[in-house]
Length: 331
Figure 1 (cartoon, rainbow, N blue to C red):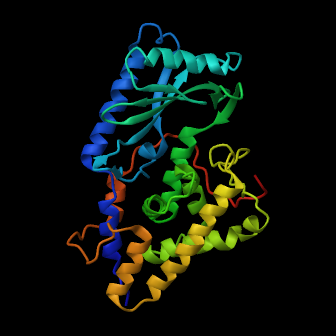
Figure 2: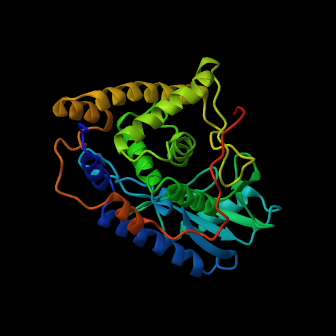
Figure 3: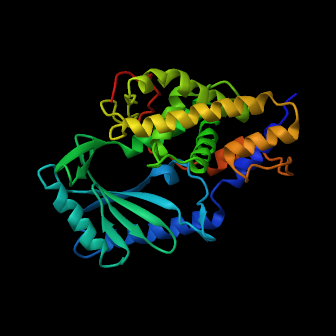
């Protein structure tokens, strides 16, 4: 018999899900921005399409956290497909997008590959891309080049991986993201999609109990990547959208080792929680891992998380599904 029932984890997952208000705010913010770009007099000649990306689109986001009694805004990634070409300067393309959006938004900043915007409803990362021979490219103004990317492929990959895992992949991602929030590394890496890739390459696709599934995933990370920490290397995780890319490019050895050590520490703590026969002691251990929001007693919510996952999942792009592959090599 499980000391902590599955319902305690599903109640916790329901609790850390973005609220309807958060989702409505995000929808309102990105719809307003996308309509503006489509119709803006000076930009519409460059405009081809806009679509969503990131954890908001992939349904792997968790509820925003509070800082000093103020709730943070949701993060939304917006891809702006333009009719520029790879002959156009990356910096000029980002500058055009920035100058256009600056006509409407005051809290705005240039970034290496995008334009960041803050509103009272959401924080938005607006990313210009071009499409060449069926491949998307993103400008990097620091490097002065166009880099291949595939946001729609990421969305499709996450959806297909979730199906393969019996719809437990996305909930596991949310559990792991919440754990990372409770125990952040100095530079807050790895982030979002990199965490999804670590989980996809390490999770047990058969295990159904979320407590065991979470702990097994951390244990698999510890076992699979121990060698890298010994030699201060960063494992290369293939980008599911562009197999020639690695999602860990740009991650330092210090950042990876910090993440690895936290995974190792909490894998051991989680295994202790799973083996604990006293419900109160087991709950205390899980709260050490997930924080005070992890429920002390089983709640009254009995709805299936799997059904909720189906309801909340976003439509995906009709790209060819990309199956997770074993990562090889070094970053």
